[in-house]
Image (cartoon, rainbow, N blue to C red):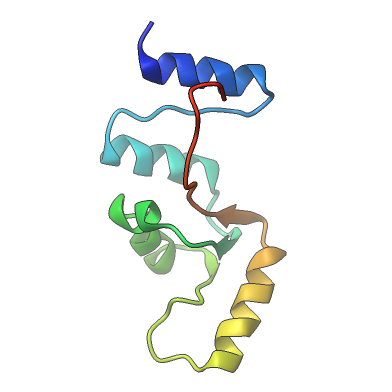
Length: 102
């Protein structure tokens, strides 16, 4: 059993749904399958979300994105969007670490 499968199995055993992607394109496709068009979406900090192209798709697609990272907004608007993002239907973020124990 590979490390990825071992980790996925451990996460599942700990009641955490785990979806494994083969590459960036697969990760993007899987993420978009989970977030229906028309949904409200909040953002946490994540380089991965930008690297796989999800942030661009959320910005250009049929979503209400509470984007506190949009260039040119002032701190008041930034804080407003952060608060809105916490009550969104979907919250997209990354993780700093996952152990193979799940």
